[in-house]
Amino acid sequence: MSSDEYFNTDEFRTASVVKRTIHDAYFPGSPRANTRESIFSNVLVSILESKPGANDISELFTQLEQNSQIDISPDLLSQVREVFKQTYVKTGQNDGNEYLVPFHPKIPKNISPDEATGWGDWYRLLMTTDEGFNSTLHDALRDHLESLPSSNIFEEAFVRAAENIDSGTKDLATDPIKPYVLACSLNFQQDLKSWLQADHLSTSEWMKSFRDLFYFHMMMYLLQISINLRHEFEHLSSNPGSAYEPTIRGIYFGLTEETAGQGRKFRKEWERRSEITGNGEGGIEDDIYHSWGRLVVMRIISKAIEENNGESHEIYTPTELSATNKSEIKETVIDLMVERLNDDRLPEQKSFDQMCLTFSQTVSEYYNSKSKKNRTPTWSGIGSISQLAIGDERKYMQNQTNVGTTFRLNRGALRFFGQLFELASGSNHYQEFIQYLSERGVSFDSQSKNKCESILDEMGMITKKSDSGEAIYVESI
Image 1 (tube, rainbow, N blue to C red):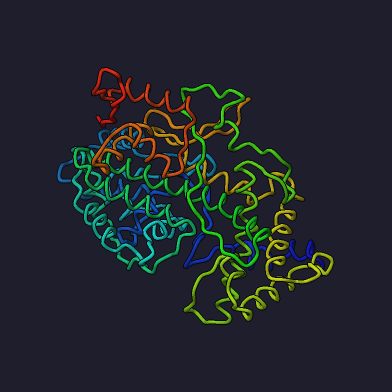
Image 2 (image 1 turned 45 degrees about the vertical axis):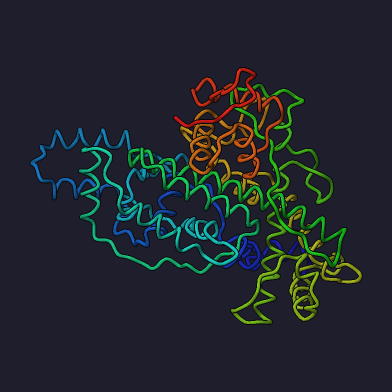
């Protein structure tokens, strides 16, 4: 069987593509372009260790009608239902389903969408450090969620209705999921720890901000793993036998109020600058595309290690394994890849490094041969990032005609990062705020830095403490 024939079989689709996921490291699930409310509900269900008793919104109204402490006429109930739907229910663009906005923790704890999105595993990855799962921070978050009051009387009625739905509990799997870019997880944990101090907001406001906090760090992890995998495989090609260390790579962002001129750096980040051939430098869209083939390689490495060492095993990236003397594992990797490649695609030497490079390129070429609508890696990868990045109040990405996709921060996102920065920092100097963003992968060119300062000033978040204007500080409002 040729490699092209193999890649068209059910075995490849189920064994290789789906199992690009590595449950205890790097890429624990397939991110999908789920409705934002569904993603957040799935995360909260995991955090709250809940097994929701209902997945139909109508059950919430049934409980409201049957267990209300006051008599509600049919006309009033109809009006209440309509107001609630207008405010707290979103309709999926692709599936037409209705999704509850998780405005209070009791909502997703007791009623949640009936779809296994797996986003809870990504929360566990972002909560993992070198020392394991951060149980202390997780417990603090769960306790905070459990203690949040209702924001108003209207919401309280529905929170009580949700509590009447019979729901179960399940233990959160606290086994660590090793992040590929550790700094992404550490940044999330630092910001989460800061946000737990934000006690001046209503519950619904706090929940929306926590949602956008998770979305930003999840988006950034998916971007960073895609970019770093390109560097990893370039390192494997040019520096065999030495390990590559993933790190936060700066991504140029602009502000939504800026014009995306041809010379602006943030305009050039996403666009594809070369054909998808496996060679040459492309934009971040290329990195996302190729990351799927590279993740398949990492999955095969994980499988080979498990076959040699059993369930309890260390996790290696391709360059880390290349730098070791674990010849048996390398041979197993080669054997697993040879089974899936046609003879005319095999490197002459069949070395571990060359097999990894060839296999990842073959996967990319397989998808490149498909029509654009059938390129699942491109669609799903870009789709999930867009869902995480483009919100109602805070946006981290923008799509424009004649400009394309660019990474942008709108005023809501800028204000939010200003709040997080002030909560986390003992000093709130503007240059340190820029550094704070840079450590999270958000880079500004000089024009964007000036525009950012101007926008913060317009929002009342800038204080100048010298006549020269050199001492500029960021303060939340």
